[in-house]
Image (cartoon, helix red, strand yellow):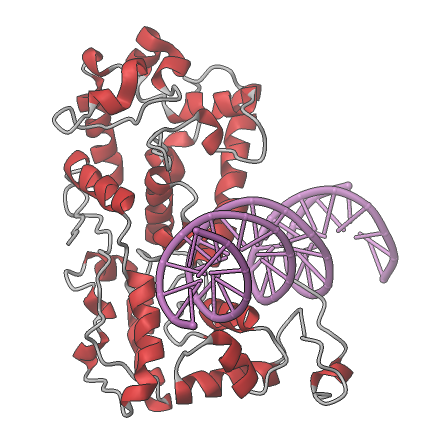
Amino acid sequence: MRKPEPSGNKNNNSSNNKLRKGLWSPEEDDKLMNYMLNNGQGCWSDVARNAGLQRCGKSCRLRWINYLRPDLKRGAFSPQEEELIIHLHSLLGNRWSQIAARLPGRTDNEIKNFWNSTVKKRLKNLSSSSTTSPNTSDSSFELKDTVEARHNIPRRQENGMFSTSNYLQDSSPTSIQSNALNHMIRPFPAMLDHSGLNNMFGSNGFLNPSPSSCNMTQMGNNMVGDHGLFGEVTAVLGANIGIEGELFVPPLENVSTEEISYKTDQRALLHDRYNMQSNNNMSYLMSNNLNSHNISNTSMKAENGDHHHGVENYFQAELTVGEWDLEDLMKDVSSSFPFLDFQLE
DNA sequence: AATGACTTCAACCGCACGGGC
DNA sequence: TGCCCGTGCGGTTGAAGTCAT
């Protein structure tokens, strides 16, 4: 958190044009919230100016997206969300915005922080416990009980590759990481026996648990597809992540046709909706209509066509993923992880 | 109670990208 | 074509909170 500017600067518009930095005051929040509710999102620098805020547009955008948005779900991550994050991270890497797009009400910043604090810490604990207890068959080993352990399969990177250093990114690959990975992949001892860690998690492969959709060219020659292990991986992951249909990953959808208004009374509606959802996250995630984003279903209509575009754009931006790699990846995933109900357009 | 270490998370920074001119 | 501007993203920072001693 940044130290707020001295409050004396706050309203001293005429004599001090310096933009404020640091924590937002409740007054600033009110100004931004009121402006956004009444005018919707436009050019952020205009928002900052017109709302009477001595902030840069970027800061306003961040504040709105990460804190003031009415559809934000506050509070701790549910185990289901945690599981989903870990799984998605194993697929997408540090693409926080894309992960966030699949976790309604959560922001990329929130997920990023969660990952960097909670999940990384657990992985570190995991690796340190592994150094003190080299016998991985030790019954005290708790990996099987941790959600991250269930999902830390090698993940594809932007270039379609993965490396061991992705799990603990704060340092170059070390024995710690190797130890952690050793734990993560314990379900596949045969794979290690035959190929070794480096071969399995080499720099030019993506572990695809489905033999049928396995692109051996892409995977490169370090993979061990000929050991019949993909089926085993599928079985293990299937058993741990859940049976088919248990885990639903919200699809990204373009809701550009929706008419949305954020008038105050409707905010309450949104809050109710999201409160309901947070009470039953899993059923929410499993809902076929994760078109809970489809807010038009709540009969919300824009009162002013000029006003709704900003919010609409926001939803559209949040929900739409047009990136070829992600779509390909998700298609790949949907075929490779049949127990995940990916619903891609 | 004091204090130092550790954790959390809001906010900033720099970069990349795309659109408009 | 190149420049400018707005936006979005991911990495990083650092104050506040919490925990351990």
